[in-house]
Length: 153
Image (cartoon, helix red, strand yellow):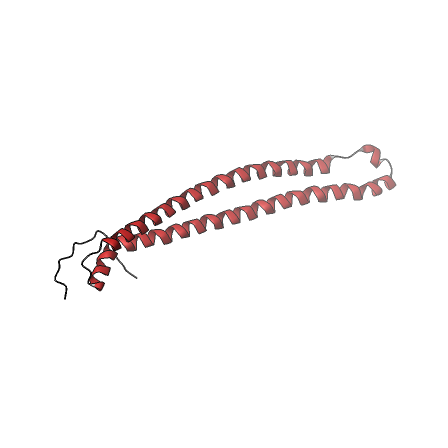
């Protein structure tokens, strides 16, 4: 049995491996764990920056879509109010013009609905992306904790 006294590591996982393997020299293991922790910490930093970038990109896109929605809503208003009296002089002329009039309204309202649906879908995708980043951060932070504070299930 090895009677050599082993220096304690600040990383609990290293101490656990040293005890389990009865190692006298743990420098390589500790170095590996340190590198692993640093890599995980860098990944957490990157994921946190990804969240900030995703939020910024979403806000930029949302602003552009809001402007498009405002324009589309104005087109709806115009479709309802844009009536040329020359097209409405007789009952027959009114019947003929009604299809064109309603078609313009349908098109304008469809554009509003399309933009609103697109904005809703973009928000859902954005929320999923942020949640995914947060889950990845949690996984990495849990790993860091297990490597530095001890192994618990």
